[in-house]
Amino acid sequence: MMINKFVYFLLLISLICCSLILVAQDSDSEAVGMEEDSDHINADDSEEFIEEDGEEDESFDSEASDEFLDEDESEELDYESDEQSKTEDKVQLKPTDITSIKLIDLHLKALGGVENLKAINTLKMEGEFREGKKSWNMTWFKKAPNKYRVERHHRLLGRDYITIKAYDGKNAWVREVSPEMLPPENMSKGDLIAFAQEAEFYNHLIDWREKGHRFNYIDKIKLRKEPTYFVQGKLKDGRDVFYYFDPQNFLLRQFGFKERFAGSLVDADYIPVKFTKVKGVWMEEKKQYVVEGRVYKEINYEKILANIDIPDSLFEVPEVKEFILRQKSR
Image (cartoon, rainbow, N blue to C red; front, side, top):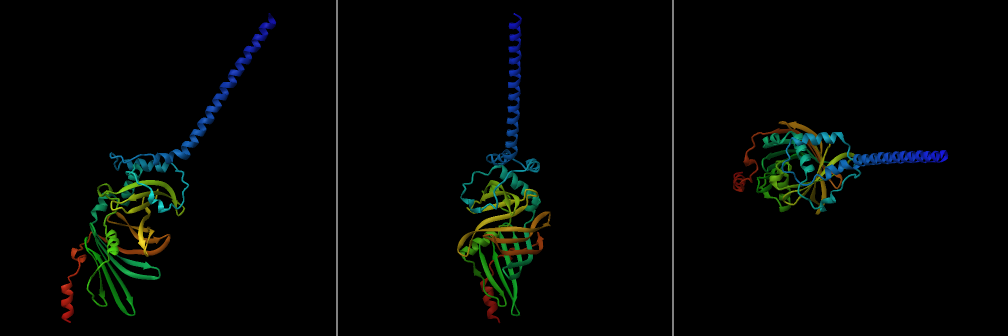
């Protein structure tokens, strides 16, 4: 009997030990599983949060932007793509997603706010325009919503040359006024379209809903080795545009578009190099125009004046009759 009791006691001890070992193994496996889940959340879920926000949230307001900014500062998104190609315009854009809305709102706030942006309705800019080894002194006049005039000055062989291009919201024309005053000529259809697009006074992102534009957040990429938010847009007239936002200050690192160049449709970009503040709004003081990755033009605004008086007559086609009478009176 004593032996049987001793055997039973040993069996009981063995069962208890086995149970304790199994419990310890389960606990260890749960701990490992939790560690694996945590790594997955840190590495991947932050991007899923941005990509899966869904379609436009009509209740979104500017107050939510601070929350988005705080989230961005507290996390490092995992990104692998480098120098995103704009050939992704084949992607079918969905209704504007919440991340694009937040980025647009943050960008407009960074510029100075929609109220300050809309408070500016005229601009006069003076500066230098460089194309390759050539350079010209230029004056730009802009008036909301879409009036535009450019005066190009240069000196050649001791003579001053002045060329004027202007758009009054409907007609676009070109005129040489020095060294001889020639009659105005209508721009070609292709030049008119490009000039009219350049004449648009306000940023595409201002009142984008009312204008009928759409935007989709694509990814957080590396642009010139710097992390950048990439947003693709489709304007109401069908144009594809590409915005690259700085994740620190939400100003533009680059604005891309498609343009016909030397007979071919190519990738083109405006790259802001320097900003200056005018009437409470950050404006581009220096920018480069890049075609297929190569700097083609550079604009340096030496003076920017806002909300000065600019008469509509500055943009209107000059009377040809007046020109003829002047020529006959000589």
